[in-house]
Image 1 (cartoon, each protein chain N blue to C red):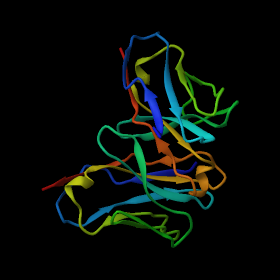
Image 2 (tube, chains in turn red, blue; image 1 turned 60 degrees about the horizontal axis):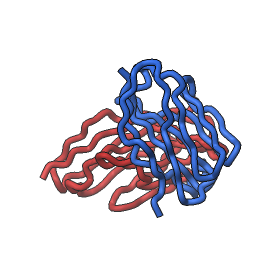
Image 3 (tube, chains in turn purple, brown; image 1 turned 45 degrees about the vertical axis):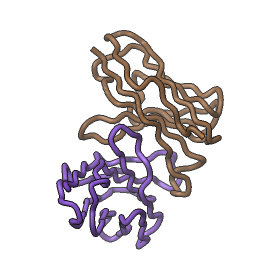
Image 4 (cartoon, each protein chain N blue to C red; image 1 turned 180 degrees about the vertical axis):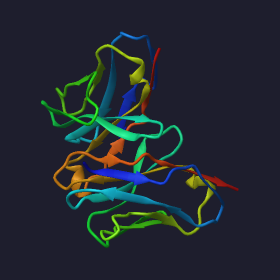
Length: 112
Length: 116
């Protein structure tokens, strides 16, 4: 079945460092891809999305490009802040599905 | 506009007890779902509903029941709690089909359940 694989965390960075969180997927169709973020004590919220190959999703300085050839959707940010500390989840959904399939999550810790 | 409201925030049960986790949304969303979050496993779908009176099973439905009598409410019932059901439970809703990406999932803040 469809699945999402994320790099294990935690990822610890200093403020203003470059961030990459890897995400690869397995899907039989042409899924939509998402990054969700979970701040401490809260539910998840959508960070960005891409619905077709070569689309780039972006929000709050974060970016991810839908790469069909490598089945990847890596999350990047050029300069992280302490307030970016959270757990990041990669997810996919088949276009005809009411189900979102999540990766295991990657915890990011940003030190001042 | 409260969004998705889950109650209670914390609950401790003994093995064999039953309880209902409440979920309500005020956004007139047709789609509602329940996930459980366990360390290292991400979120796994328990049950979902595409409208009042319609429910379906997700990835891990055993031990849980749901019903959807109104658009606003989607309670999750644990029939006979087991230690394996110790987890954080999230309710999420969406205006329509999540697959196209046009309507993101809105999550509640979660219920932390411990079964001893």
